[in-house]
Amino acid sequence: MLIGVPTEIKNHEYRVGLTPASVRELTHHGHSVLVQAGAGTAIGLEDEQYVAAGAEIAADAATVFARADMVVKVKEPQPQECRLLRPGQILFTYLHLAPDPKQTALLVESGATAIAYETVTDARGGLPLLAPMSEVAGRMSVQAGAHCLEKAQGGRGVLLGGVPGVPAAKVVVLGGGVVGTNAARMAMGLEAKVVVIDKSLARLKELDLQFGAKLQTLYSTVDTIEEHVLDADLVIGAVLLPGAAAPKLVTAGMVSRMKRGAVVVDVAIDQGGCFETSRPTTHAEPTYVVDGVVHYCVANMPGGVARTSTFALNNATLPFVLDLADHGHRAALARDPHLRNGLNVHAGTVTCKAVAEAQNLAYRPAEEALGL
Ligand SMILES: NC(=O)C1=CN([C@@H]2O[C@H](COP(=O)(O)OP(=O)(O)OC[C@H]3O[C@@H](n4cnc5c(N)ncnc54)[C@H](O)[C@@H]3O)[C@@H](O)[C@H]2O)C=CC1
Ligand SMILES: CC(=O)C(=O)O
Ligand SMILES: [Mg+2]
Image 1 (cartoon, rainbow, N blue to C red):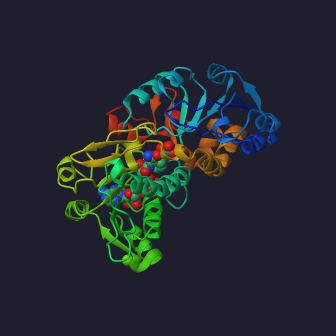
Image 2 (image 1 turned 90 degrees about the horizontal axis):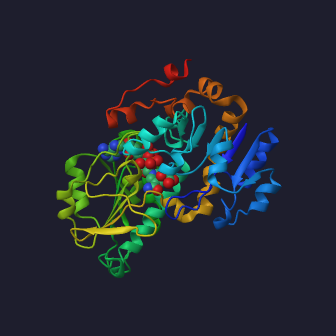
Image 3 (image 1 turned 60 degrees about the horizontal axis):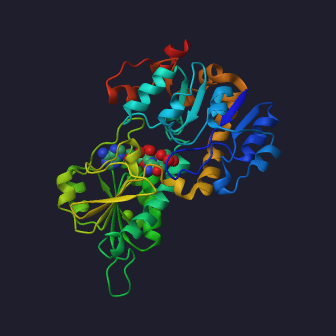
């Protein structure tokens, strides 16, 4: 199979779909890889390293999309990329379609087979291709939040850990999954007072066992959310209903009653965000203020630490890329129900139920669309 890797074009996005080491694995399996010139240069992955691993270098994205049987990316395709896709071609990348009707329509129109990293599952109920970036974003959310709390950034001028004689800041984490756990761990490491709110009792039990008395775990109700958000210095949004638009747990009314200079970091923004006042921002302009509350809503946070993120992402995606390349999409999707859960759009139909429901579109189960 010919696998194509275009340069990412989203704002300040420097990750790359395949590392030279991943390219070497693919060529070792007898596949060909076409990498756009300069795709990894920003993070020190030079064209020469890709060539040494067996890749061919293409001058531009149009060539990569025109020749590749499978396009491997990081972020959702931008409109000009969607228009380069064709029927029968595989697109393997993050899509986050539920809150994005425009991209959904373009992918349906393309006729391509679009497999989303974020809805691929594993046998333990996890999301193995979302998890590495959730680890990164969870850890970054506390760095970002701590920075935004500084006066010059519009924050309250509060140090997360306090100092002897002065109280620590209060950090509230909504959702105790992969992002939430990593955020809580970093916030506890900086000696903030940390509360995690989740609607899964099983998850709260695991967190309690893992962190003990240092972490307060609370069951998610409107009451609990309101009480703790109003009292917080930093709130981190980390909830997820896989594939679906994020639930708006924090209303605009609650935000208006938060402390002036408090900060919200809405990591769930890629699924639409869990604060009613959230809208996507970029690394170039990461924050805005609503009712005195600083909002950080960058939809590609891991792009900020693109080198770490690229290696972490490739560790998780490579086995699936190899599977798709070795067997073709139909056989690979037929034999692996977890990879099949990643199929969001195939040959002009939406095959992810949560996406179809979010946008009121016709849904066709993947098995039916693939003729399995
Ligand atoms: N902005 C960015 O750059 C990035 C965003 N993300 C996003 O972060 C979000 C979280 O991802 P993960 O932690 O991997 O998901 P996860 O599935 O590991 O955790 C989500 C948690 O939310 C909880 N939850 C669901 N509904 C809830 C409710 N009503 N109240 C309280 N908790 C609730 C679930 O029980 C679960 O524990 C996703 O939207 C993901 O796409 C992930 C990486 C990067
Ligand atoms: C998951 C995601 O949105 C990202 O890594 O950018
Ligand atoms: Mg505890």
